[in-house]
Length: 150
Image (cartoon, rainbow, N blue to C red):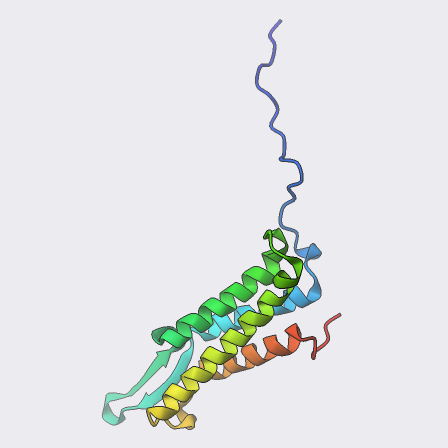
């Protein structure tokens, strides 16, 4: 008679997998807003017509402010979806997406200030900039519960 010497693998105690159903609705909305901000970082920030040479466009990733804006939106997604798995103070953890939405809005406004100081007319702003501003303002409104989510 042979005896099985291999122990049966057991799941670690207290470890549950990621369950999208356990995330509050506000966290889901913040993650969607963050995803819109991430996508907007790759869309044209502004477009300049160069006459015979065609037109040129630049995305937010080409500017240092855009990189920080991108990181703020990425952090917003991470803390909205996986925030409870971090070992942090509950009050700080609940305020972190709010702070990241402030950062995203501030960096987007810095881009606008830099473009206006370089004499780029506002008519040349691309869809990427408008989506970034809308996403950052929406994230501030949702995180302060001005837009109530059930």
